[in-house]
Length: 348
Image 1 (cartoon, rainbow, N blue to C red):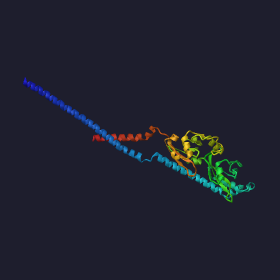
Image 2: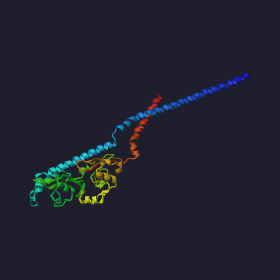
Image 3: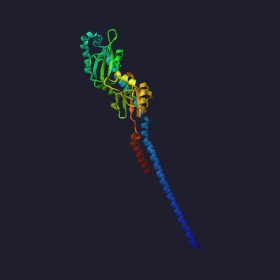
């Protein structure tokens, strides 16, 4: 009886030991599996971070959009200044031609004797420059006494560029709607032999000459605005040309229309509803403009030197999916590389 009991309890003890060993092996294998998974995960994360380093460097080293916009605004403003000053120099030079001066300084009854040579000068200029639509001379009263088109003896004394030229200044008008097209004017005084203003020479140039300077990019557009907030050009939507950012007060709008600042064929100035933008631009406070003033994503502004006009470079508002879209493929590629690298290391 005692031998059988010893054998029985000895067998039970061996079974318990075997179960313990098996349990320890199972726990060890489970621990190893968990450890292997943890190592694989950590390697994947580490390799993923390393793979993202080039993307992070690209983002950090790429100039900000605002800096790029500012550079574009400055470059565009410089190009407008260059073009305006070139035209000013041309009209000033032609106004100093002896034939032009002699015609303008002549008495009305003797002008016809000097008209042929002066008219030939103007016609040759218009013929040689496809952007110059017409050239004309006004007397001291602002009446056209010679033109390369019809309209002799027309009174244009209300036009601001004529008044400025007769006051001795070299004048530049904004974009205006005349003779069925958009154009702008350049004018210079004509002096007699005593150095007094005898009249003024003006040319009308197709608006396309200015408009071709206004840039348009894949992610931005440009606006050229005058000091009254009128868009002289808008490469984002040409239909907004000659619209102010917000309605002008009644008195100012009536004064501008009476002076035909934007052309004899423009019945009234249309407007959008960007009140703060209109206020700041007319005040010349470009540094206070914000993207929200134009309902855009970002903006840069630059004032011209030759005129109190402003160049605005604007980017449309972007949604969250549009913002992250350029990074989706690089991030997925980095993740795939990290998984592949971790798998290879796991097999080694």
